[in-house]
Image (cartoon, rainbow, N blue to C red; front, side):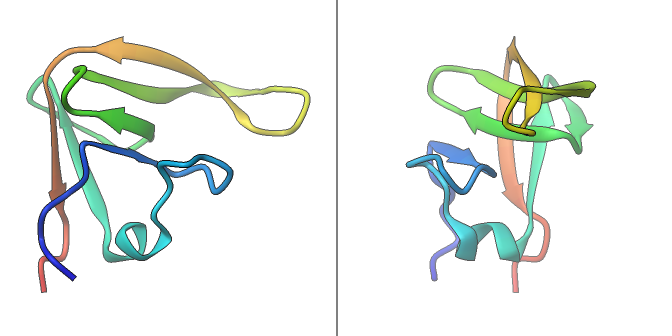
Length: 80
């Protein structure tokens, strides 16, 4: 597996942008220079992240999310 990260990645298994093998390695996100731990999805080229909105859930039990725009920097937490 290479160390290049995709432009867009999601933690939702139903999403077409989900990659379980890559998520197991551990992905970290810096958003506008600060570390975010509650990111559900990100897109580097469009400059946004989706973060969980508290403990709110939709009718299917998925967390409600908010889209935030800014500088997105994904990185591997465990490069080895």
